[in-house]
Length: 456
Image 1: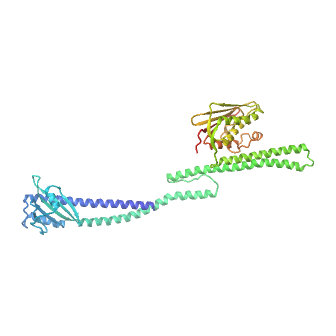
Image 2: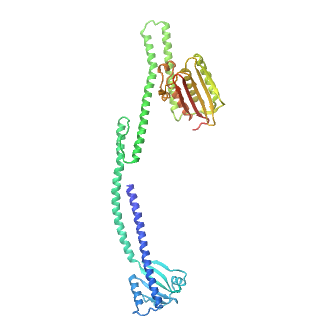
Image 3: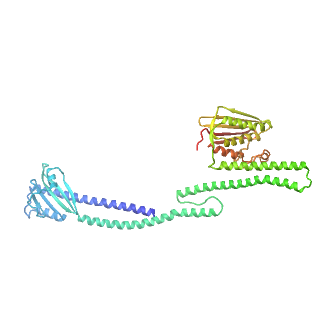
């Protein structure tokens, strides 16, 4: 309908301008013809020295015939403003006081053309060989013949408009059918996909816009599929991780219940194992709650200026006893005093996870190097160890929830597989970035970059 209405509007404008242009052109051509014929008569009048008296005179007859052809009136006025010829004979031999004729006679106007109702009035000077004005000719010409022609043209234009409207309606219908066909197919395919599993949308489109839409939709589907796989894996991992400690506790409790007169030493040992499983379950739940809070985009950020040097020294002070048990040396290197606008609790959690991992997954007698630097816009924290390292094929997944490079070792060290996911989220909410470099057997380096000024 929009295409049809737009086409109709354009056709109306085109026909209006065409008809207007034609009308103006026909009027211009007729007036030009009248002026030329008046010029010819003027020359004959000059030759006869304004003597137009005898009805038998050829000039007199010619003027009358021309006025009759024009369905109008011709007045010839000499230099004394006397009307020497009037085809109506009403004002013959009278003197004219017409303002326009006087202005042309005096040379104040070259000529005057005036439209009055269905007539055109032309006041034209009669100029002699000396370029002097010897008189004036006033020709009144009927324009009714042009109106009839214009009416005929208008009728033809209406016929053209009707024919064009029919063609435009047919074209609009065809274009609508062709253009909407892809959309209907796309809608049908999306509906079918909505009833089944997510997959790639396979269909050929006629128009570039539809092809781009299908490509964008396939990208969105792929993202949704990845998100769905991630969600299912997350749910599966959560279920497994939460179920494992409960299963262990049930096995221990059942073992105690099945035996009579359990020795106090065994009872104490089993209860100690159950407490460890409860602690492990509690740690998993706390990490999950922390991760959920980090995932919330509307999470509260308690941002304030914090001395990063002091914060790192405090974190290292807490971790050094754990490192000392395995004879791991922890070194802190600061290149300058750094104060950044951060959420101290969230940043502490992220950095603690990085430093604890550097200790947990290190070799006995190894070392951990923590450095701090800054420029005019960011501050940089590097945590480097010479431990077991991370295989290259695993490096892109270590920030995923519940992902473990070595599951057996992770369980031995008490890891839940959520630490690096929490770390990454904590850094992202600060509009920062984290990068990883590692080689198996040589160690791992994490580099954190965070803006000095927090930006919402």
